[in-house]
Each structure stands twice: as structure tokens, then as C-alpha cells.
Image 1: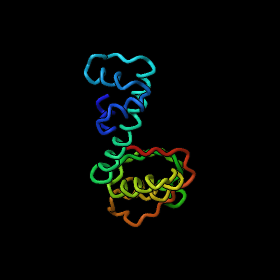
Image 2: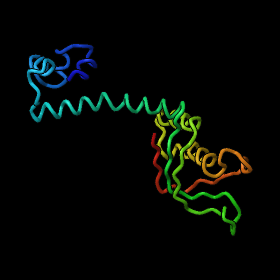
Image 3: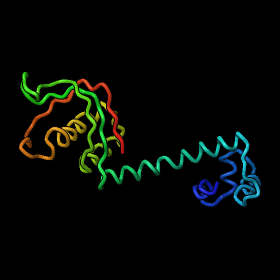
Image 4: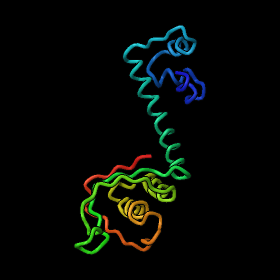
Length: 157
């Protein structure tokens, strides 16, 4: 209740309208006179709190991933990087890998602009190629990786 009142700039009247209860009901919960909301009020509190809280949490996690933490990409897709008959021949692989903050920033920016998982394939392919196949450069810095036939893709902060 206190969190939602803060989001309503301290207005108990506005919060009461938002929750569909009287102003007096909001004041009773804020003062501690009432502590156990009825089912309808409890559902309204949960729904309204989640609608305000989750975007903040997601934005904070995205900022952290893009600045220092990176993110984790899990997928099952076809990866091809070498000639047939070698251990690098193309095949379907399950890969889970942590990617760098620079790749994370590009992926997060694309997601914020409304990109779908399919739209992200180029950025994801480059991130996985650097982190998993090229391993930050080494002797495989110029390695080209084919990324196709994505069965599933999961991007987490």
C-alpha cells in the first residue's frame, strides 16, 4: 500500500480510485488499523504492485547487464563453423553461454526497440560466436559462425 501511494505521489484519493476502494480504506491500511485485505483488494494490490514494480526491476537488471554483468543466452540451433568431417562441422547444438556487456547492450537495446527473438538472431549469433566459439579472440578471432534453424532461444539477465 505504501509503495503504491508513493507511485501516486502521496495521494490516498488517487490510490483509492486505482484500487476501487474508499479513501478511508486506504488510510486504514496505511495506518496499520487494517492488515488483512479482502480477496478482491488483495488481487488489486498484487496486480497494481506488479505492474509498477516489474518494469523497474527489469530496467535495473538491463542496465547492470549492459554495463558490467553481461547476460546469459541459452539456445538450441544449428551452428556451422568448419568443413564437413571435422569436429567444427555444422550441427545442431544446445548452448548456454554468458556474453559480454557490450553484446548485452546491443541485444537489450534491440529488445527495447521491440525486436522479436527472430529479429535478434544476428546480434545473438555474434554474441555466441565471440563468447563460445572464438572465446574472446585467441587463435580463432576471424572465425565465421553460421547460426540457423533456431529451435528455441532464451535470453536472461
